Image 1 (cartoon, rainbow, N blue to C red):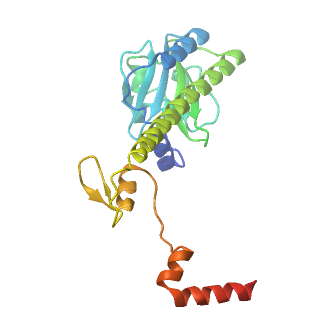
Image 2 (tube, rainbow, N blue to C red):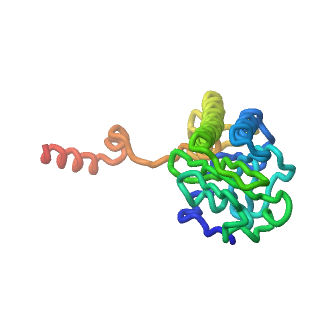
Image 3 (tube, rainbow, N blue to C red):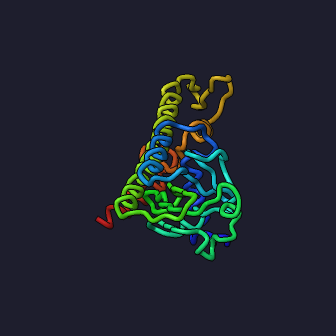
Length: 239
């Protein structure tokens, strides 16, 4: 049975995209977590599965060769609809999964447990899951430990996201530090290709800064003396 979409699916997918982790190479920090999950739960397969729009992609995997499957057969697509661990002790006794091709064919899933990877804003990106070829029941301690490991996955993802933001900020600061070629008359800025642009255009291209325009008191007095006089009189009246 195909899982229904998450209630806030667009926002969830945007959150997943913001981490910029899909289709990245394997990393030891994540592989250590899946290895621990498989060992603690005594199963042959453990995955960090990220649920994209039409697929589930595995950031880390133990005991499985493929790197992704379609979302319509994904166990994890069901698991992200919950806030807590989803345990399927025997897939052949669950109407949602007994005819799933991942059950009837390789990898022949008979047991599944998945903990949603919840962002600080509460969006489930995917799961940390464990899989077995025989029916199984996890102890409370195993479930608690699996949940703790899932939180560590999210911590790693957050570290990745924040590090990327800091790197981008430092790059912007470096660009700002090189704002030397500025026209003495019109104040346009020359970039490293020799092209001139307004400061607004330059900032919009190289940073996330946006401009709003106003008129300072000095320029108001110089260019709009009548309006400045009326504004001053109004302020004096109000005070």
